[in-house]
Image 1 (tube, rainbow, N blue to C red):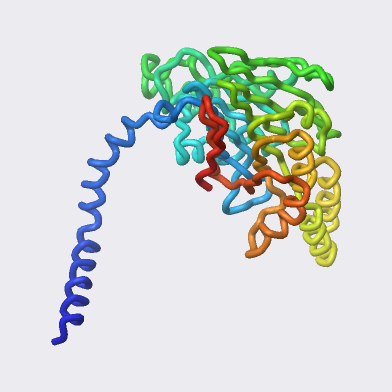
Image 2: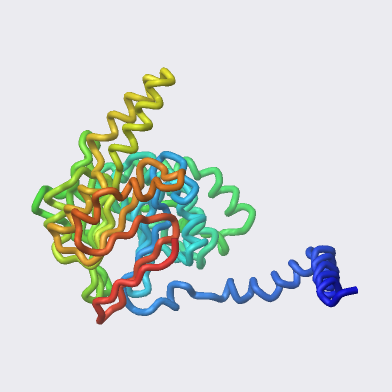
Length: 356
């Protein structure tokens, strides 16, 4: 028997043995890995600075790389979330953003795709984090009270069940759900500071997502670094003014030419309702080129596109989606997907892109 045949046989035998004992091996691996994972502090391990992770880079339309809109921000060792679409809490834990450590959630507006992961997020914070007697803070323009109260009512029975099962010492009822922190929708040119603690400042400003009102964006400032999150909007002078010189502009983007192909296909198949909706969404979202032009006007350090419409399912669609952006913005651009992370170290001008 030739040597290579012996080696191949040994490899096959080893693979068979590993496969045969895969259950016990998996249990052994769990016993070693889980304590390390549970003891890890992914927030505390980050260097000082502003760190952004897309826990959801998509829209209401299914995309295997992009869940509902969700942006995680770590600043000064604190974790904040902007919007919480479908899959937000699960993605956060996947990408090193423990839901149990969320300080506050900031809503840009009340479209379902930006809020339909809120219930799970609050539950994971209450059940999966340290014992707390404080509900999760939910910031947003006037109307956020209804969101908080509605979710608290929906989860009322679940809260009662968990307290009865685990006890109040483990699951204090007062720590469940949300506590709303509403603010008046800012007027153009008059932004509102909604959070200013421990060196972290969050400023809200009006955006144009008409007929959706209220609709706002947020700017985070910490340790000389800055991030602006547009929320859903058309190209807006207010965003360009608020973004002036920021390190990172996180801007939504819808590609009209790709949506037009979808609308034509819907028309060809007689789906008149879908045609109407696809045509309607064109007038309250910015295109990738619009976002790039705003980034150029504001001289931002980096442009990150999120809330990607339509889903980019076929090879080559990402290139088609980005058609024209390089001509509109001279800086660096990242097409976001779930897990994209951009770090802005304190005391530096570096912009570090990873993940996704």
